[in-house]
Image (cartoon, rainbow, N blue to C red; front, side, top):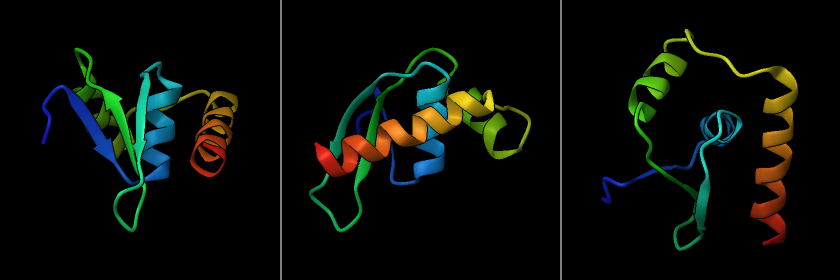
Length: 77
């Protein structure tokens, strides 16, 4: 596991990270589930912990656009 990267197969978590300005580095399709890879930034772990505790949110339109972008990258390369 690369500590400089954050990896998740969860579309909602990936959309949250992308919506908060994290750069999508790659989509790993080598397993049955695609894995979204993001560069880890200062505060990424705290941000994710807050998101999973439902204390952190992204503006709804930004979240929707993030989902569309990630699905497009996932299915269209």
